[in-house]
Length: 345
Ligand code: 5GP
Image 1: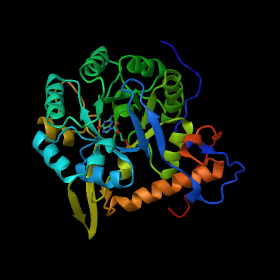
Image 2: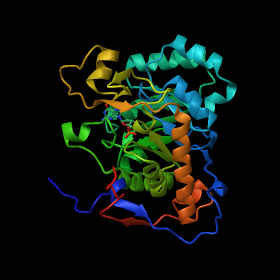
Image 3: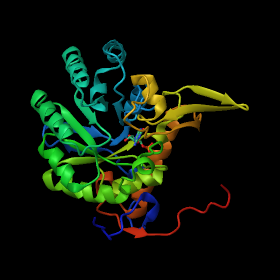
Image 4: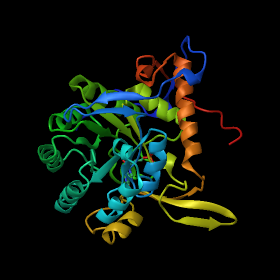
């Protein structure tokens, strides 16, 4: 047994130190980023915020709303081929730069992926998603997928340490998804004791990825626009959101009415709700590692997006970053033992 004594930080442990700036208004801030991905060589431009590939968030409706604002959605893996075909028919051609197809690492997953790409060859992004990105089987799957689809952009995750980010990039991934345990409906840390505070995971993984010319996606743990800004400040190239996008018209999940108030169901992808829905129950050998919750209904996602993008622009003006690209260079975090004043909440 070993103990690492260096303290690891989460979003709640830091704030941005404001810096002198020449920016006059937040409207001057450019949130678009341009990347050339490491292994596919594909060039992408857009606002690097992603809807999570959960069936309550990464829906076709969410993808259309996010694409309209130049954002991105990892579509959940439970849509059928027919559903994909009719979605593509009703969207315009630029949608391909705003969506990823999600997949697990089983034989059925790769067969489905093959059929999907055969039918819709313009689909460009693949998100290979497993709870534990440390398994050899997962690395092999990433390698095989790269061999099979040399021009597709491959997202692989989740991991939280630099050496595994490097291994995945060297195995063919373009972007590595970072986060174990920070999610709003995740119970991995409670059920297993495994995890890594998200801010430190981003800092360490971004350093490893950027050293090789790859990118990372910070996945999970953002509860406010300020957290999204902190993830970018720490070095994330993309930020993936689940809970912050739940509860909207475009989100999946049942509507629930209670005492005159309206809620929407939101659940983790390894919650018993999700497992019952998609695989007929929780297998005997595993524990459910996700929660099922009811979140207040919030109408169209557009208002929430405006709140997130407005907050991010404002962060940039506080630290003097004219472009989102400059935010991490302009970031000095201060360690804190307080966040917002909660007297009226
Ligand atoms: P949020 O933005 O809600 O804090 O986090 C979203 C992320 O939580 C997802 O992108 C995914 O990585 C993770 N997640 C989603 N469902 C589950 C689950 O059932 N269990 C665990 N451990 N993580 C989950």
